[in-house]
Image (cartoon, rainbow over all chains, first blue to last red; front, side, top):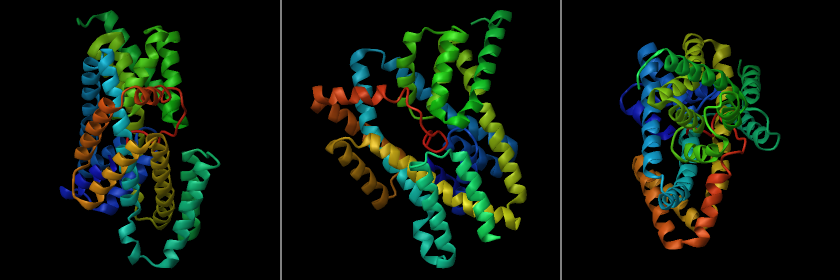
Length: 156
Length: 211
């Protein structure tokens, strides 16, 4: 969902790529799905409260309609197998999309223009967060809190 | 469905129930699943326990947050379309409110030097979270050569062309259907576990879901 959000928001002139990055960061700090939260932020920044409400509705409804369709169409057992087949094919693509979203978010293509002095602590923080997530199973909210504090310590 | 006092009360009940469940997602979105099950089958007795595994399986299979989908289905089974609407509204409102609050605070303080610094830190952490979510999904998704091929093809199309992600997803779905037709028995056995294991595993909700 993230690449699609970025694609649309930038194409329509609502925000720049770095602002979309901010949207994702804010979205990650709140409970709920990141895609939905990002949409709400983008809607809010673009058109205030009404924009936020419209974005929330717009990003939630299609999934629900699809849900209704799937429930109606896939009640029979043979269709249940078809659903399994689709999930089987879908998941690899979703994994790729998530990682591509990470690639766009981190902005690897833009990294060349940033000084090493700035890049190194950011990378260490990135690696430390990942380690805490994967090996320590630290709660994401705590990781965000710590990274904010460390950020303030390093860069201000 | 006629709107009378009894059904109004039921709709309100559905709305409030899911409103209370939603903040629990701070523990992880899939952590909501057992809570939803407990509420739906034991506390409120809206549905029977046997219906839940299938309900959660479908909720996880369709795009969109599994918890939101599950809420919609529970609401629908309990009180029709308006029940589904009440459930989705209840489960979405807390996140919506918190994001609004954060957005407001952020947009007002984003130029403050400490805020800029904090944000740079959070940005690094968020990047790690997205990568982590991607790797977790990849571990679950790439289980044989076919899925690896689908992943490789998707990556190629993403990087080499300006193809819209939605088209890539449709392509992957079609590939999955074809694989199902060709492979038969051994494939079905592994695919069956794909749906089952998703229902009772606790996972990170912030980034892993709804991407």
